[in-house]
Picture 1 (tube, rainbow, N blue to C red):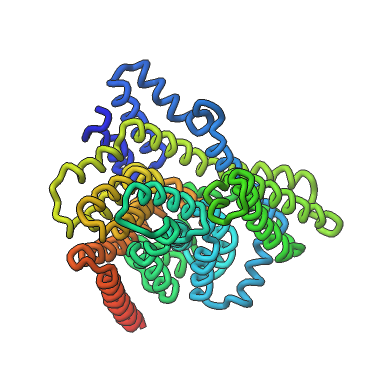
Picture 2 (cartoon, rainbow, N blue to C red):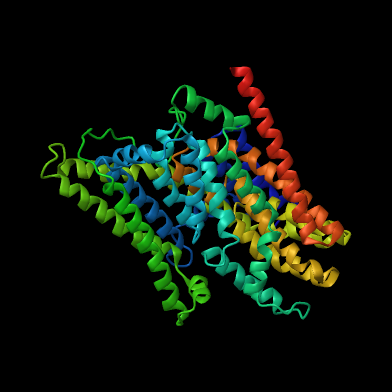
Length: 522
């Protein structure tokens, strides 16, 4: 069953169940059980061992799984930081300060988009940091949490996948070095190739353009429109009946002693200490002070934990400083805030543990390899290869919940195919892999970046998946047409022009439709 069509059943079952039932843990559990049964060939004891391995792989994988453990620790620390910022009144003070300077809903949305693009060093870091900074502002302007999650998710991975100075860029440049080193068809360096591929990533261009459009206008559709209408009319930024990861359950005492610094200093400290540690850990591992080598060897999870510990201690210290004048501030509330912060992040951590477990079992089943070999076995005209590779990468990332896994499997295969079939389309095909993997990752409810984006925004996970999916599908359709045109003409620029023209037509149509709706309402 490994490496056959049967290997796609676990992700399909998990994804269909999560879309139908909206119960994420139950659906992921069903996928894990299905995968374990297939791997064990339905032997009961071996199946139980497989399930146990899937649920413990986040903590132990032939030794401590420090990568996943540090990510979970960082989430817990972020919950504690959020609790202390709220307890000290920092969130309220920052919201009051921001409203006097960012006076419109458009300004709040544009700020979120700019932050998402500016914090480009890592997608995990981006999703959680942008959420902490933007949430008080978007809440004040009645922007739904689903819309905030869309802005976060649609800027974090897309900007990282085209930024050479990022954890993604370093990984991808390393992958390109392996691929380009085996062929004499190209003469440029991996870094040059990576930079040249940026304008060929049509999905990123379409997604970021759409983010700007939806930040500038008040136009929305499908599920997102329902969330935005509820936020505008009723003031409910999310459905209180649903589980909201990262949302504090504790009602902290109200007071007026909070200051803007109580939020700004911990978050700024978190950003700078984490970035500094990424540079330091990369330098220690690489042994040379070279920016590309540093980001290729950096330890992102360890950097996040050290940044999180530093920011947590600072947030607690700022609250302690209030005790002299704030009659509600005491050690008892400190303890309650600490526990509340930990509890708030437990739903997100449980979803991550299940998602990581399912991803591990899917890797064992060689689901990605099965999907990729389908392309090699089909005799497809060269003109259709870029768009087909884009679609396949999207399917693979959607099914496996990992864009990096899709990169690792598909990039060498796409490289081999294009070097032999059409060397001039090598870079566009590799760019199509990156674009498709980010698209599939955006749509997948079992993706860790999707989970962390909803956590950073304080949005129900399935609300984020359901509201972002139509937007991602539109951007992917635009990108697919671009890759189809690129394959037919052999020109990257003609393909890019096709993408731009389609986006202009869409934005013009949506704007006109929005004006008609406004006039009918009036």
